[in-house]
Length: 334
Image 1 (tube, rainbow, N blue to C red):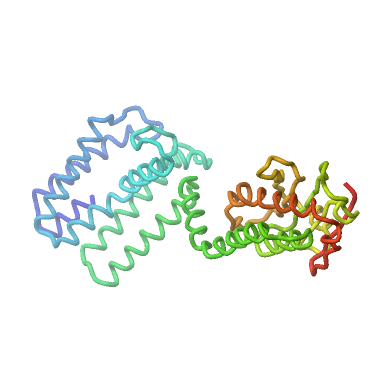
Image 2 (cartoon, rainbow, N blue to C red; image 1 turned 90 degrees about the vertical axis):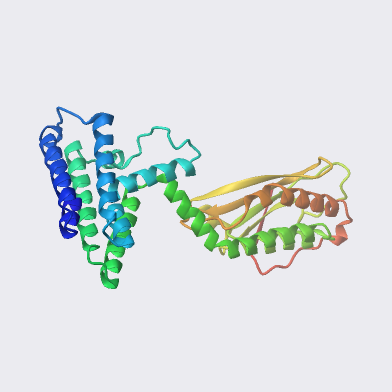
């Protein structure tokens, strides 16, 4: 019907006759194709209709300005074009062949949302009708008309895709958000890298502990427990070092333990394969993303910390006085 109106405006009587004839044939078929359907087009019928619509669009483009010739068919075919683009993008993002069948098309998503088959058909008819009406506004293209059509189409597509809840596009949003947060991620990563370098030259246990506290004080973790392990050959250790230490951004470690959180346990093994204890890192569940490369914590950092502990724990006791820190430390026997 869109091509029929366009042909009338362009005074193309052959195009008008062919488009209205095609519309009448499809309308008669629709009587038996509407849900619950008794007959179906099949590939031959649907491909023939697609061929005829493309031919009518090309025929109408000969007498129309370039913008109108391109914009009207694209907008009027908005639903099938959108469905095709979504399918291709989804499969490319998820690493699947683009011609692989799945059950994540628009009508499948609407069915999963609780619509009946009849309701899904009516919704898709309404969307197609909206695209058709918007395309007719482009018969008289002005700046305000073009802006209005583009705004309505863009907003409708954006809201529709959001409500369909495609996992692939949710992942794209997460990547985009992480890109915007990249500066803070770099800052947090540098704090861990800086801690690795400082641990290599730490001279006593107090310095080691201060370096670890400084590293986690400036990133997205909320606390840690440092468990030390004594090995044969160590110098006599004071009672202060023969303990496990807590640090938290909360006034007390108990406040963190009462919150729902996840933890990451790092075994502290030196480069010479000596086990020096473990470091348990806590983070409270929240909506914010972890703005840190976890690979830094599970690769370089535990080895650097284990080597530093191994070095200071074999030093004389006098080099390890009780630490003074502006952060709360709680000590308890292992």
